[in-house]
Structures are given as structure tokens and as C-alpha cells.
Length: 169
Image (cartoon, rainbow, N blue to C red):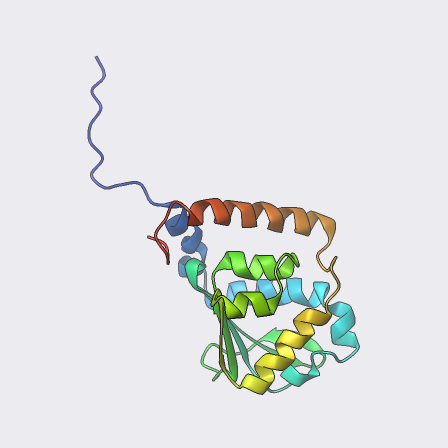
């Protein structure tokens, strides 16, 4: 006869599991990963100087539900991770799903800001330049394999957001 013992604690939620990399990996490591991806995806706009407005400026991207905090700047025509202690000029904050919707071109920035699903704080003029840059991007910005992965993650995050309280558990 097998007896099932009660668990001493509840199993972690999907949101708690998704936050683990942000809490366990050094900030520098996931910031480096993000800049590698963005430099590849945004190679043409970077080469054309379309992100030069970030030269010597710090954009902070806070993915709140994944405990990820990125600080980016442009140096020598490339996006680089700014030091973690660098004061941000502008901060974009939101949950992963909202950032994925932007990347997938499934929502426009204004909708996400007006619905308060994305937050903008700091230098408003710089924030507007970033928002206008996002509007200027092509629809098929992500390569097909990355687009498929991002779509699947977005659906996963959407389904988990309906089962967890806001901000995760």
C-alpha cells in the first residue's frame, strides 16, 4: 500500500519558475545576452545611426514579472550593457508579455502605454524618440525561428497571467 504524504510546501507557480533566471544569473550575463540578440536584430538601424540618440544615454528596461533589469546604451554604433550602477535617463517597465507583443508587432507602443501595461519614466523626450523608433521598425523584425519562439512564450505568459495574481506569486 502506497501512502501519499502531504507536501511540506506548495509547488512553485509558473511565474515563480520564470523569475528564477533573473534572480540566479548575474545581471551582466543576461544583459550581455540581450545586447547580442538586439545588435543582430537591429543591425541595419544601428548601422544607419537610427539609435544614435542613445549615445551616452542609459535606457533601463525592467521586465517586472521576470525580475530582469537591463541598462542599455549605444557605444561605437552598437548597443552595449551599461554598468548596473549607471543612472538611467529613461525607464521602460512592464511584464514580459507586453515586451514580446511589441517585438512581435502585435501591439503598438501607444496602446500599451495608454492602457498602463508599459510604463515610461524619466526623460520624456528620450522616451518619445525610443517610441518613435519602435514605430519605425519593420513588421518582420524577428527572424522566423525567433518569431515562433517569442510567439510561444507570449502565449505561455498569457495563459499563466490568467491563473496567477498580478505581479506573480
